[in-house]
Image (cartoon, rainbow, N blue to C red; front, side):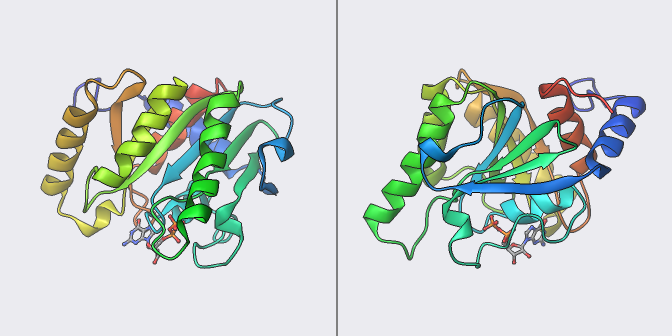
Length: 217
Ligand code: GDP
C-alpha cells in the first residue's frame, strides 16, 4: 500500500482508537446561528444527504449506539447538533440535505443554517462530506461542494455503507470521487471508504480527525 493510501502508522491508529473511546456527550442542538456554542474547541463537521448514514457513522466513530439520533426522529436532524469527545473535540452534525418531504422554504432554512455555520466558524478544522458508496457524487451534492469551496473550509469525502459493495467496486468509486474533486480547491485529496456496520475505514477516519484537530490520546 502506498503512503497516500495508508498515511497512519499503527501507533497513530491506536492513539486515535483510545481517544474515541473516551467520554462522548451530546452538547446541544442549535436552530439558529446565534445559538451556537462558543468557538473554544476544535470542531469537525459532518454533512451529507438525508439517509446517507451520518448518524450511524457518528455513533460508530465513538462506539455508542445512540449518541447521534437516527434520521427518522423528528426535529433533531433539522438542527446543527454538537457532541463533545473527551472534552477536547466537538463533532458537529449538520442538517441533512436533499429532503423530499420538507417544503422548499424549510429546506432553504436548514441549508442556510448549515452554510452560515460553515462560513462563520473560526474553530472548524475540517468538514466531512458523506457520500453513499453505492451512488458516488451526485448532482445534489454539488451544492454542498460549492458551499465548502466558497467558505474555504477544508473538507474530506467519506464514502458510507461500503459494505454494500464489493471491495473492487469500492476502489472504483474512490478513484472516480478523487477524480471528480481534483479541481476543487478546498477538497482534501484522500477519500475514506467506511462502513458503520463492519467498522471498515473507522480507524483511519478517527486518525484523520485527531490529526486535523491536533489532538493526541
Ligand atoms: P442519516 O439520515 O444520514 O443520519 O442516516 P442514518 O445513520 O439514520 O442511516 C440511514 C439508513 O442507512 C439506516 O437504515 C441505517 O441502518 C443504514 N446504514 C447506515 N450506515 C450503514 C452502513 O455502514 N452499512 C449499511 N449496510 N447500512 C447503513
